[in-house]
Length: 84
Image 1: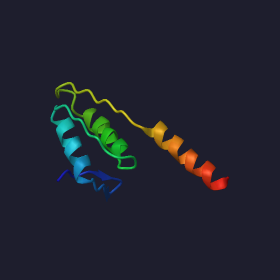
Image 2: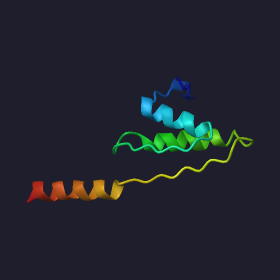
Image 3: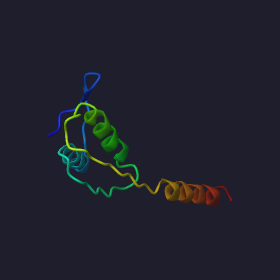
Image 4: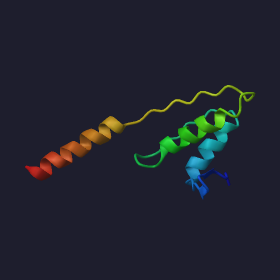
């Protein structure tokens, strides 16, 4: 289990988040397809923070793709319909 602490509080990762972070930090390529609200931002935040301490580590590239626009559009459609 990945041990992460922030301000004396443990950060509990979901299994998929932990797996992605561990693989990224080991220099592997990762494709994580996760639903909206799952915590993808935590994955790349932890990776970025940890990477600053790994200057001698293998170069890694992290690409994030999100359907946030689609999520917002669907939310607005629901709100419009509920107020009509």
